[in-house]
Length: 271
Ligand SMILES: [Mg+2]
Image 1 (cartoon, rainbow, N blue to C red):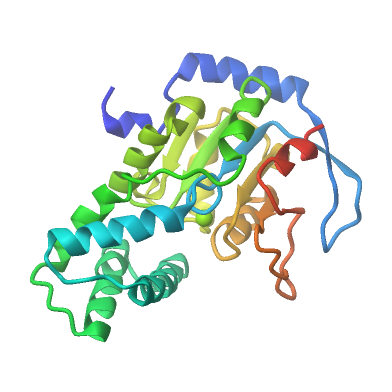
Image 2: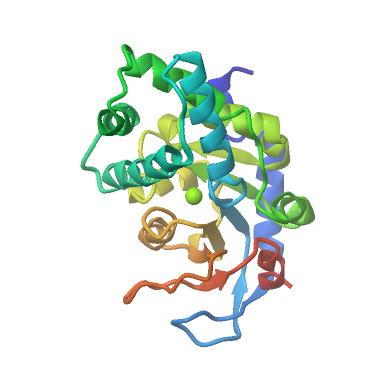
């Protein structure tokens, strides 16, 4: 099976049966309220959509290692902790431009490194090639968020699980394969294949078109991003669970169905 096909339901017949049996049976999951809604509201969960970077996997660990490796390979000199921290901020800002539809993916992939190199006076002859290498190296370092793999394993057979990610196809396919998540999840949806990004309604419409009739109000998205996962879930009409490991305050006016500080808390939402 080629890589294009991996992004859809990889075991269509089996998934079809699982999806419908789970949808029929369902789970009465007590979503234990949140900072906006009453506690104790029951919820039927028929599918879980997982964000990948910063939710199932620790993105910063692989990001830091990948940038350092590329600096070495392109002989750009030492890459300091300060530069890495700067890069993380620059990168986040560029991705938010993409989420708002203000830049193309190619522009953000290249623009973030150009900005970093300009800031530190680094001469890189081919930023496109640098980014290509970076996409590959992102899959070199796999670090799960605490309890994430165990949680996915615990939910297997209970409810279908899918990855929904805005990362590039090169990086995401590699890290999902090397982490074992590709084999554990029922399907993977990468924005580059889908043709739209979270938080757009178009992205989620394309996902649900492949899910064989799972009701949206019985679907939960779990993610760390208040600019892609949560507004994406709201746009799509599904339930939202914000992964907030640092205990950050929820911005005024932002609505979520539940807030968790650790990934295994997802299991408690479904007991
Ligand atoms: Mg994320």
